[in-house]
Image 1 (tube, rainbow, N blue to C red):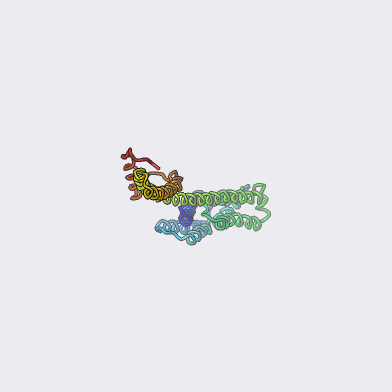
Image 2: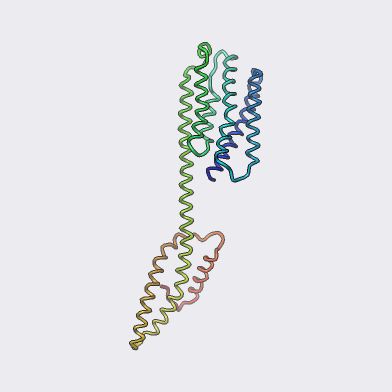
Length: 280
């Protein structure tokens, strides 16, 4: 799968998680949700659902830049919703643990991020940065009722999310290297098939010429000169055979048999059926 297809898949997963997450939030926080939070929940569900439908309707080839834009777009209403959820929890709880949706979102985005550092970092910092900004804007009374350790806890989650993102991007890089090596291997195998075809096509004339040369080895000086010339030509053909020999190990005979492969096999069968001929 290329980077454009990976980016498209990441956008689909992001939109899908937005729909699922918004549904959970609506069910879980409906009793304490006000008009504004419910409006944002509806807008988040609408944007993520619309993006998911649009992405599924698209057919390859995909555009990487468009997938990146949708990946970030569906996160914006989710950031606003998580902000409002923390405000709602703070207003209805005597003691509360803040920024849990932001922490979970940062780790999730590190896992599903598309190829490339920039989009993943922007997505993670979007949630971690909004949590830090929210922390600065909270009143002292609300901070006194929150769990200890903030904002260092959310910063730690952001750091761990960036580490996970690093491993994710390393995986993409390794996949690209493997694809490159695979392409080189396929190219080498194609060259090897042609080389084997040339070698096997040259073998039969070599054998024929050698048999004729052996019959011409008489005391006639003229014939001896001709046979010596023929011997030198045969030596060159044998050297060509030796040059092409190492490519034989690069060929894996599987799948559909090509025209070249059929020619190679036909020549081998012909040589095997002639025991009087020597292999050179």
